[in-house]
Length: 233
Image 1 (cartoon, rainbow, N blue to C red):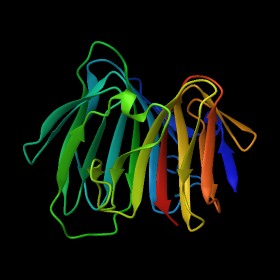
Image 2: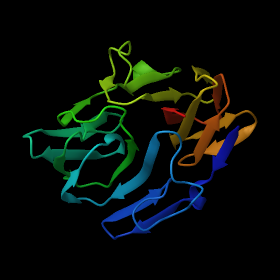
Image 3: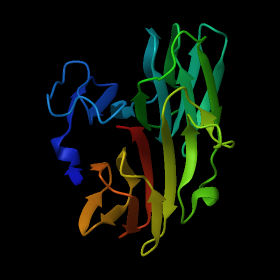
């Protein structure tokens, strides 16, 4: 099953400094048919104005992955972690037993991010935060694991859940395959460009919910950058 969820069908709210689109029910947006996809709970498409952001706020028992599409985001938390994550790079916060953090666009340009929440399969652990660059060349023409709950994904940022976050950069006409498995679910969003999946056109910022598929094959119609979550069903 491959279900297209066009960008225009997403919920959301515009707060002035923040224009947020929600692939799943979030805050004041609720859709009974879009509450989760396996253990994937949230996929927000956030556009953050310059010199603005999220003030300190708490989280608990959630794996929060931020993929920066444009600009940069600056993180600071009550554990003393601080860092700036630039476009194309990824940060992971395992909220664990509790953490308070702020996310701020300190740039003079608009920042655009995907923020992804995945329900943890381990609880009662101390919170943690980490970030790393993923040069686009490493994922050119292929899927690369960005964050993972599996021990054999040594180069990925660790998350405490049965899931992977992967990315790929494809030139127009290029194809890439991802071994998903019939017992898994995937959710894919192109950050830029346009893709074809099983005859279906997927434009930038559209969502695609996928299940009952052993191997996923995507072909770029235009130069494209995409993010996929491989989730437990």
